[in-house]
Length: 206
Image (cartoon, rainbow, N blue to C red; front, side):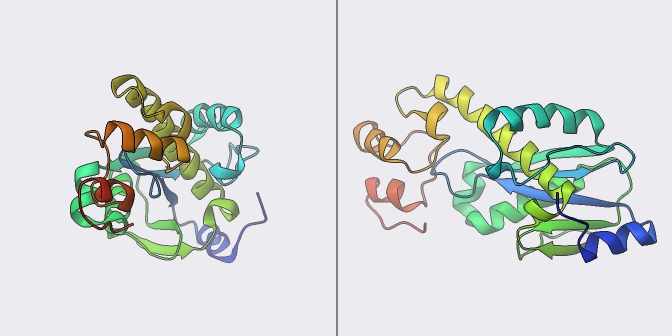
């Protein structure tokens, strides 16, 4: 990771307990959006943390177990497909992150959030653009959320064969779109996303 950024350094200097928060799954056409909140242990650092999208699948899987072992506390939460369609993806992302923060067991006063919008929470918050590449706790959260969601898509691939979820994890690849046209949407497809909604006879939001 890069050197501590100002927001994180200030929290450490003042001894304020904080968590990092990120989510995965905003772009895919199906499945839940998954978020994580992580309180790392400064005395037990984790090497090679980075934005989960910049890590290989093998490295993400290894880090997933290491984060769960070494973190002082963590929580993985979600917003469902139904909530995404009802609230829109932005509000669903915020809801998932709020749930992750609320699920932490240890006292926490501040949340460092990846991106430019903070979820509703009783904690003080700081949003950090590209935080998953700059702040270790946000990177850890991005890994937990990404790996958890990918594992769930592998399970859903068995439940809904033919769509290729195990390979594309729900993103709108050419193969996924072809399967959608051939098979039609299944229960876990997001009805408000344009490629899905078009097959259902309407214009999409995404």
